[in-house]
Image (cartoon, rainbow, N blue to C red; front, side):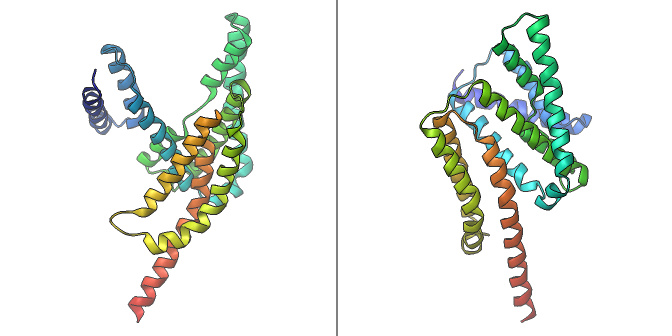
Length: 258
């Protein structure tokens, strides 16, 4: 199947999932996943390189947006609850699935650990999409779920690193650039957004996309994962965005009074 045929078919599937979601009241993320499995097997579809890139980039963007939605003050207040729920949601399924695969099914240790990791992880991007769709991102339970999901993904990344990752010369570069972006970008974003933001060409979005693509590139070169740096980057950027919005509001109020 050509790229344009595959894109047209997937667009139709996504549209159908949206219509069904509205009619039956089921979250669209679950319907898209289900219909994707059905259509993929029905038409014997194979993923293509452009689709793999879009899926990876979309996942990173959604993870960044999920970090933007988390209230840092709330995260600090509910840190123990977030860590407790996140670790428990990972450790329980991981232990059960790994031990079952190892002793009941007779799999190898590595295969059992992979199965445990696959069955214990969650998708921060999917959770974020569901919470946004249900309007739960600004309520306490939604914020707690986002924080706990981040902890679950952190445990998954650590497990995958222990099982698969073979650090190379790029891995220190990936760590240094990730930390540098997390520390520097919020400070750079404030004057950048004030000077170039709120325009039709939206340079602020291009700045964020460029940073996320750099993280993806270095993660690929270093055999690492860009999900966690992207989430933390969104988390620290949320504070910069809020302060920028407040400063714009103050300037607008000053101009209106004058």
